Length: 172
Ligand code: FES
Image (cartoon, rainbow, N blue to C red):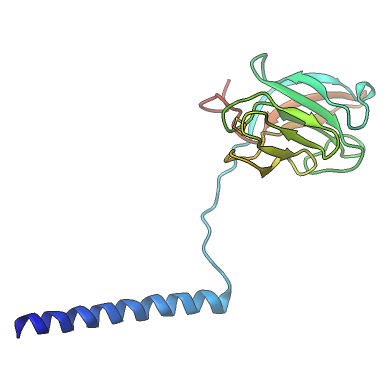
């Protein structure tokens, strides 16, 4: 008898829990809104470093750079049309780390689809979309370097959008 009562209590609690879950699901379906935790940006400023001049660049041809120091290889690109994070008069000049965010393999630029490609485990990042990951094992987008271009066309890097591989923080 006592056992039967406990089973009934258990059923009631299960049904009550189901009803609450159902109401929550229905509310989400009706509003179409789900809570998302805000993701803090990793943007950090570095000492301004000259990378070159606009006159040095040819559309879709990568130029090797180092930023913010010699242990951080990167690439400077003129895309030929306005792109996300693009600097300069045509908003088409961008720069990225070439260390893969997954395990730090050295990546190369593919001028055909305008992505940076990792030979390690094949992650790919879109140079026209702020370094957004489009394929592979990495769990973050490619760090994009913040650029400033002065009146003479000199290009300076002054920050990074994400953590550069191998660094515990974006602090020099
Ligand atoms: Fe680049 Fe693994 S090191 S995908």
